[in-house]
Image 1 (tube, rainbow, N blue to C red):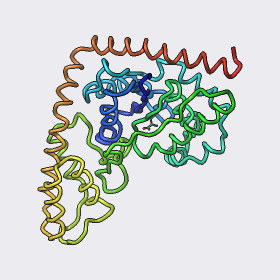
Image 2 (image 1 turned 180 degrees about the horizontal axis):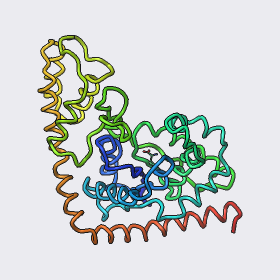
Image 3 (image 1 turned 120 degrees about the vertical axis):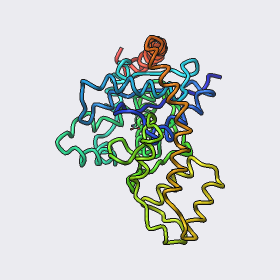
Length: 327
Ligand code: TRP
């Protein structure tokens, strides 16, 4: 039996941060050993919000380097740059013809982006989930390692797959999200999730120990004398959530007890957390340097992956065009 196909992608909006790493890349790493994986830099999704065409190509390259640095192994998985496989946009258009506009207008991400960029409400933004469905369905992907915030998009993907199958015959699987323990990584700024678009909320994969310490130092805490149970939200809750993701249980429990006993020292917690985060990132940073110094190798990896991706993509498209009566 053929191995299950896995697809995931990250937008090219600057270097990866801990949220991407724990929520998506860790899932990718876990899956590349077992499944037939395609991991993408989704540049066509990136341009749905204001961006700089002069730096986009470098941002795409940065994510590829971060993927390789994190341990995605081109011998095990295919690395894709979305815009280099034109079948994504072709399939997206065809899928758009079977999906209602009203459902897309109702999606939380669309509403958020509309509020964030009221002067930039473009067709691509509305179309975003359809292109995302096309990304995964193009490869007949069954598992999608992404953060929990992407669940509404996964639902659209499944609806589109079902609708296509019922209209034109069984073609696509209904993809499921693959969750990791780091599927929700909190912001350092006190509320919400870690995000590249919120200054002060993130730690990038290339931060050195000093930078990590500085970023954590700015994270809000409390007087440390409240005692009792940990708060459920806010700066302190977020620090504890991060701590749990990076240190062993007994270290975590020690700080929980300190909090309960009103003797917590946040400077100590932040120092332990900074060290733990840096320990995880240091090998990635060393690996990234090696790839940066060997751009030819990276180009070869990308070319080889691209050829494999184009083959799969074109085979799906031939099937789709035939089933839809286009050829
Ligand atoms: N919307 C995803 C995000 O913001 C990125 C993405 C685009 C994606 N296409 C995808 C993720 C396909 C998984 C599969 O994180």
